[in-house]
Image 1 (cartoon, rainbow, N blue to C red):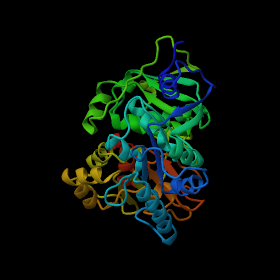
Image 2: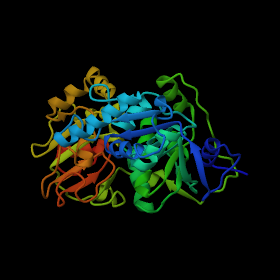
Image 3: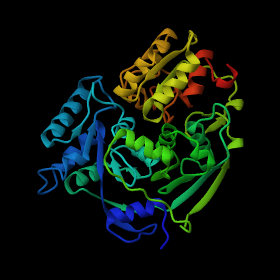
Length: 419
């Protein structure tokens, strides 16, 4: 039977010769991820599993407090303390303040996720790692607890939607713009419980950072996971991060897809997702006159060194608009250090931005940039739901680092190509 990449990886981890969409399987996992919010619930559920005294393999469990760290208040400190104690008791892989980063930036950087793996995480954006040719998906805390105990996950094989980007990028168009464009056409429910397999000339030219950005946001179209074929760029990235082995899977030429959608890169310009859905997208040429109070550049979507370089390139030698607060959040300590060595932090501070320690922070309305009533924010994050970053009357506009930096300079939604 011909199979897609996702089906082949799931079959291999279920110990089966083949699987088909809709089939329920038990699959062995290569890595189980939790942050402090999902771990705190999973710890409670783990304690209820009869006979589960130890985790199945401490080297395959990663716990990263990143949403409210450094702790923003007493409650978040109590949560972090309990999660920290569990991680140390079970000797799991654990990354905290000073050694950590935003989970979905940190794991690829550390070489913990590799082609051919099956990874589950207690965070919806675990799908990020599919950029490296693997199946990665978010699950609930109960699934995390069971996986801690058994090293397995129970799931349904998703159908696969093939998305082809035909042609090459226009100036200032990035992977973030491509995924916003796709979500704008599919809608937030256009790929519910489906795998999205990306292909085409437009995909091949993307950096790994851009592919990670795109895979990160497939969940915003309702997808179970997103996958990219492994190519020379993938292998170079993975080999630079780790010497651990990996397996490359490819879709069969006659694999069956639920549907195939082709997008022409000539039709894509920088995009902005207006409130209050990631699918409410407009090309930058049609955004109109929208004044902005705050800009956030960072997050698990766009907090990599490549993203900071783009923003710094636009901000260098300039000052942000006096009405704007611009917050820069490197994705990991390594990204922070690299940005410092390259002089990017100096560029940001001279432009009158503030630079934060790595944290999810404002993306989830945690800290480091909460919005007041009626305020507008352009953010390189992945969601712009009502009240996501603060007051329910505030507004979030999703965009690339280039559009965000241009907006910080102009004080309103701006095209980086027109600076």
